[in-house]
Picture (cartoon, rainbow, N blue to C red):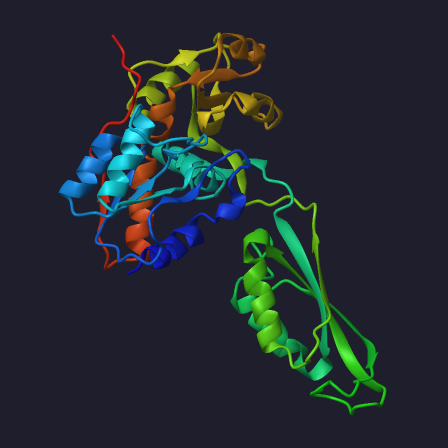
Length: 364
């Protein structure tokens, strides 16, 4: 398998189209045409992780966090980022970062936290806007069904829990081919009227190039009339954070002990106890202070996240319990989840789970 083939599989799991604008995701180091000898999956890429890849004959590192985040003006080895990049380049090791593309996926980081906590009825906390598009096109009435089926086959027409969705209008289309045309229907120099179907199909924005390729290949017209628009509909499958429920409600202290055990953490920073039972749980791996109001609006009893600052805890206002379990701790199972997903998707390929603990925060 080439690097570019592996990337295609990864981006089917977490399309880069859904990564946040501030992020630096995708192939950061490496040649797409290199043959992959093995894949090491890690939360962070550090020098020790590159050493681990070398020891395991892996020339591709799939990293959750990007080692290159801000622009590099030189690569001289003066800091840990430059030393890691230099070592990877010297040893022909590709580095790919998935970060917020996976954060925003319904089966990504936050679903992994929910699964670790055995939470039910999972749904996206903050749906990403403008991720649903609509194709409007026109086809001869006799060919409309075949064209719809071709578009459905590549994933168009899915809305939430429904597939094969479209809206169709019958009407008459007119056109007159000129001398340079090669029409499949009608004659050059003569106006032709054709009974047509207007087809409207929604699709996820990362499928746009595939939708257009399928449209042009499946359509019989030399010139295909179409338009693409962006919808404001809420996308149930793309966005930050998750909200879900415990099977049985717990007291706040019971939940905090449960959280410690399930997430394997020794310390939890939390807001003042509300003395209310915990049933509905919001989660957001990594820095999640921006989602406090969304968790409250969703009716969560507790919000599990990381990197909360002193003043963030005041936002609880006795309406919600805020639980900061630590950045690394909130995302620690991401690499395990990725290995499981990729192994299922490509069963005959070696994906190795990194054993390097990359947590920079230590506790005394």
